[in-house]
Length: 85
Image 1: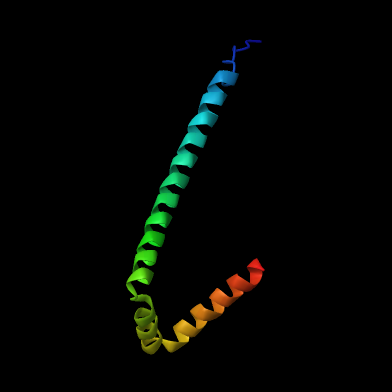
Image 2: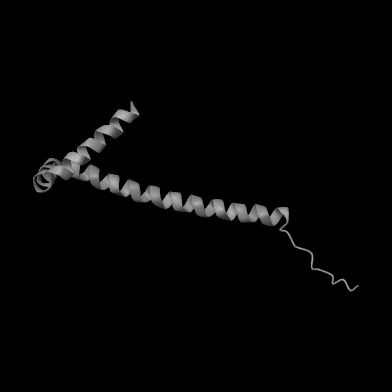
């Protein structure tokens, strides 16, 4: 009988696994940071519109253009507010 020596399966060391985990966490933190920055920029734009007084006319125009869509949006906003309480 001829047995072939099989290559041992190399498993990553503890250090390699720690580095891989740290790299994954770093990427995730970077993605979350980018998402938060984008959200802050959008909120800043909304706040600027509120301060300039253009929000109410914009809502009025949107409601006139698509009343059912606006009604659905108001319903969803109500559901979100009700769930927080």
